[in-house]
Length: 428
Image (cartoon, rainbow, N blue to C red; front, side):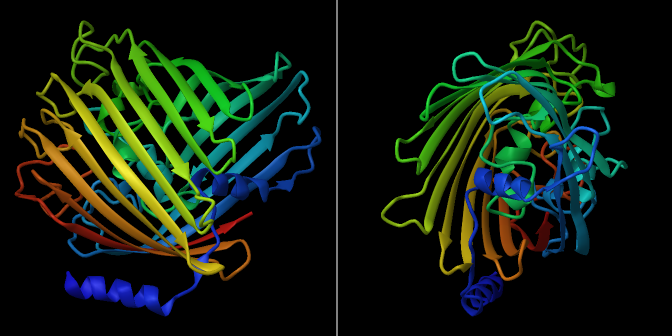
């Protein structure tokens, strides 16, 4: 462990260079804005995307919770592997910049290990991004977008779209770290299918609200939002967020909630063990701050609290879960920055992030440090060290512990599970 820490320190010292990155949400927009116009029958259609490849080394041969969906798609210990994390293509006809009746669309496709992991299903049929799918192609989102010139303009998305919840996003180059955080892959839905309306009240307040499917193949994340097998929709979901931006524009905070109602599940592989139980729900809050006294520093946080069905076969009662994460990024030079993430995830009564058959509470702790380098045009280079520890275990039998997956009867390791990732991304 000491040698690993020394090696990471030496690497950071020798590369006193920093990538001039933006906050997670802003960098995602930068990646998309680099798109090129495409010759079509309808003018104004833009093509954008990126290629994300890398190398992962797992010191334990047993991956950390949450990292498997963020690196390769293996279901056993990763060992040393080169990875095609993602090849993404996005095609969009944006809305008019004027507040008038206008229409457009957007479609995003992802190919690679991320697509395989984020579109996976487990043995019981409940969806879980930490379980590999044999299909390496993922339709991330596809929706029609409309603007109605009511007030400042109401924007609508109709179709499949990524969730507005959470500090992190599916596009890993837009996040501060290479791997996803434990909250992202375990506590919030990743996608929705339905209708989402957005309204910017003023320069400070922005609200979103939608009616979407309950829990099925488009509400995909860790064990909390696993749907019934076969992707059959279960009921209706309500989605809403309120984002408040500081008058100076250097800070914001967003609160959001998702509630899945009227489950028709008849077994513990669905939204709820029985339709009479309480709805599955999650409250999400995140924020970020770039202090004016030091523009090189970016601070962020994320918190989640909710209740959902237990995942493991034979355990049918609900589990309450909560988690928190703090983020810090510092721009040392124009070409080197260092970002850290510390997160904690807790379940009250087992079956969610715990070894098979364990019915007590469990806590997962994780620390991640990522160095980013901006040397080549449109190219992101990153190196990362990550360690995860579980109070009641995070891995079994030398394999990964995707959150909530059935682990068999192999001995359980509490960790730390340690991982080093290298990444190169070219965006267009």
